[in-house]
Image 1 (cartoon, rainbow, N blue to C red):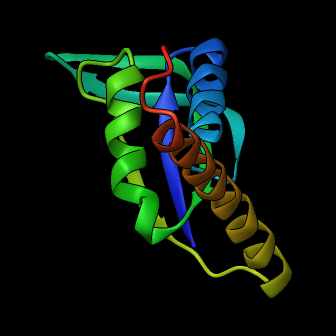
Image 2: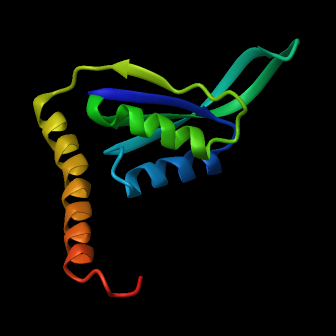
Length: 121
């Protein structure tokens, strides 16, 4: 299991990114945790509030999830970390089912489109 760790500047952005990742089937779920962050940016020390996404995904989907987060994130240089994790068997099974469910739905939609290629979309 992979945990995608992504700090966001607002709760709204963290929720929007998490929802989008779930909607396209790149993560099984996410937790959003408020945090106080300290870092140097462009020569200045910054103390700020951030909201950290801890999203659960598979190694297979990490690359696409990282690319997707980068396309939605407002930071010039977002932190998108890949953390390897071991989880209990039942949780891993559930997460894998969630990730697979979206893949099956996408295949069904593709089949429908291919059966009727002249239908306007």
